[in-house]
Amino acid sequence: MNNKDLLNVAREFGSPVYVYDSEKIISQYERLTSAFKKVPNLKLNYAVKALSNLSILKLMNSLDSGLDTVSIQEVKLGLLAGFKPEDIIFTPNGVSLQEIEEVAALGVQINIDNLSILEQFGTKHPDIPVCIRINPHVMAGGNSNISVGHIDSKFGISVHQMPHLIRIVENTNMRINGIHMHTGSDILDIEVFLYASEILFDTAKQFRDLEFLDFGSGFKVPYKEGDIQTNVEELGKKLSKRFNDFCKEYGRELTLAFEPGKFLVSEAGNFLVSVNVVKQTTSTVFAGVDSGFNHLIRPMLYGSNHQIVNVSNPKGRERFYSVVGYICETDTFGSNRRISEISEGDILCFKNAGAYCFTMSSNYNSRYRPAEVLWHEGQAHLIRKRETFDDLIKNQVEAEINFPVKELV
Ligand SMILES: *Cc1c(COP(=O)(O)O)cnc(C)c1O
Image: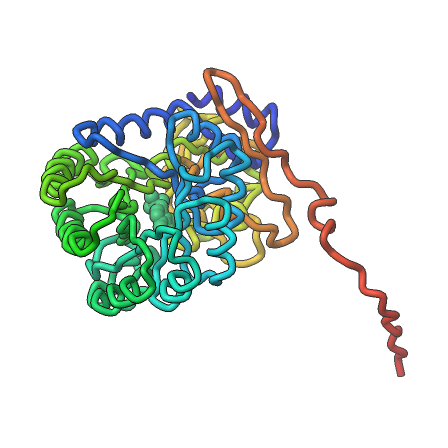
């Protein structure tokens, strides 16, 4: 998609609007599968929470992807998009036993990340095989909010609790068919990731009925030129070899699974907004746009740096801007950004807006959530309508209370 295509989408569908380029999703999918082509059984389970629009899920299904889900609602979206239950894995944290049982009844692979639920589930359903999520206690990941492998993390069953875990498995006679880890959001150091993988292999040796090993995700994508990113090809080379050796040692060909979210959809996404006001202050020039952290919370929540391009005037003189939203509290998309000269009415584009952008949007300030468009083979397809006032009030119930009018004394 070029700037002109983006501008046309904004003209046709209005702003703010999310646009996803299917070509980029497909090429990322192929990049990852080809990095692991030496592994006979590879399975990519797309992490639905990154971007859960049904059309995106259908695209993933056409690529032969599976799904990684964290709620029963995501499971239902996957089934609605045409996925078979056996191509879905459920990897929740802190959900009720009841929700896990409901998902298991749908035929979806269950992944359990605490001993209490493991014991209850195994006691009630010893016939349903489960995967266990371990915590290898390896510090990986960039932002402290998204690093989940360390000692204080709420995720996974500590590898130091293996004796207790094995006792539960033996006492309940349940079957463990997979071992899983998801250490954090950014794999920057491949050696660190391989080190965590050794802990996974060590754990795996203790179970005889395994079918797959799931290495989670955390592939880092570049946000701007020169950014460090996960070297997927190098990881593929090193981990594939180690994995194939392990399978020989183990005596069975296992499936190697990953659950990429961001890697598959981040760079495919563009978020288009229009500039309401250019405001000079004594210290900076603000560009105020028709959106805010209600639509794109990542800069405020994680400090993520989304590149901002003026697609209305891509070749203008570059100047420094602070791009801010219209939410009535601090709402900064980017400070001191060098952007091609901005006029009121211009369309700006936030890059890397595919993952954890629309799915984290809200109605704060009683604004509508944006429309979503899928760009596929040179054509724009609307895949979610912009909300309307009806959406804001449809679940509100007018209380039948007669609020007395206070009399002034
Ligand atoms: C969020 C999540 C993922 C996806 O992580 P990315 O960094 O977006 O690739 C994978 N697995 C689990 C269990 C997750 O919670």
